[in-house]
Length: 339
Ligand code: BMA
Image (cartoon, rainbow, N blue to C red; front, side, top):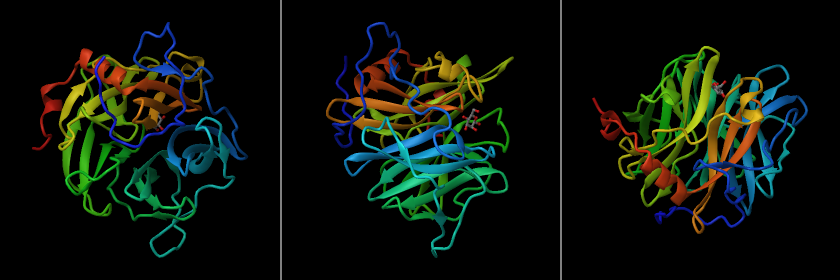
């Protein structure tokens, strides 16, 4: 096995289980999945598609909570082990730069990413249809929401954990405002998180059937000695609806619109009851990953069947070797994505 380095902090308390002997794929599920069950807090029927970061020796999460009125919103949770969670009872309160209330009408699929000393939440918000919302916090008490950073329609905003060539960098998936039957991943740059431009195409839906309808960024890219390791979702259309699987690729470290390696196969697909059965069946939807640079361990958080949160594990060596052994990049993936 190769010796790939994760370029990030050590996280000795990362949740972890060793690979079971009977596991054939490069990613294995936590044996106690799902880690969050139904009706997790008052007024919230389901939590899924959620994001987790280490914070002050413990963990903090921003959760997609489907309220009992059916409208999704974001909730904060705290955990000592990143598996068992205590939720704050009220929705996250956003304010604008002047400190005035600035609440979205709905909010879903959050990503939570630390860049320098600030934590950014990026979610799907309502801006005359589905669009990206961005808010920042340094203390998880005050959440300042930035004025609409992107035009509609867009989803799956995923920020890189550091500036690249002095700019913030963000992946997104332009879409429609419904159940989008298309979609590629694009890269945008910003000097200040306010103004975004230099948009480039990163990768298209794949020729492989599991990702032949649309794709979207998942967890924040993980910096490694091989490039940016990205877990993403790929969707296929069946006669019984969409099926969401997890894929993986490696983006160039200085020019992340270039895909260096892209895995031909999914790395996780709905197989367990909590992935195949739920509010929306057959969904595996990664939104976050924790990493421990010292051991190379990676813990991936994914939404399951729009009903639960699942946890899965791999190591950086195992996943990079697997991606390379199942190389599936196209010429379009390998170029800069500029026209
Ligand atoms: C996508 C998003 C996700 C959801 C998925 C499957 O369009 O809305 O939140 O998990 O559909 O329903």
